[in-house]
Length: 178
Image (cartoon, rainbow, N blue to C red; front, side, top):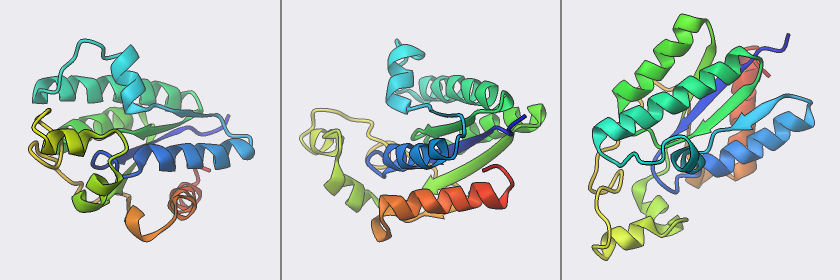
């Protein structure tokens, strides 16, 4: 059986998490691996509809994603999870769920600085926050607790998407998961 794993990509909005995950998924699928990308926005729409952005709702959302990721990984799928997951305790609970099940879990911090993210502003969130249209933007007026010791830290502003995806793939290979 092929070994599954969860690769949790955490970082600020517009850090490059989803772009890196999709690039990595393409590389892995080209090698015949079973891969699923659990995009945070899609999960919010289909699995966590009705949840808001309070700390409690964010925690619930992260736990739901973690449950699905562990289920996939336990069954031989590489689950790539590009989600903000701003709170360390929520991410740690997901890691513990994986450890309890004996399922591989790698945390990748896409450590793009907020000033770079706000320029990228893929979804226009930083502009809306600056205009006073929204509040509670992670890393601006809502907290983001950066991982203290992730398995890998990516500075996406200093390398291409391909280089970032290759770095994650190298980690998977090093851990015997790719």
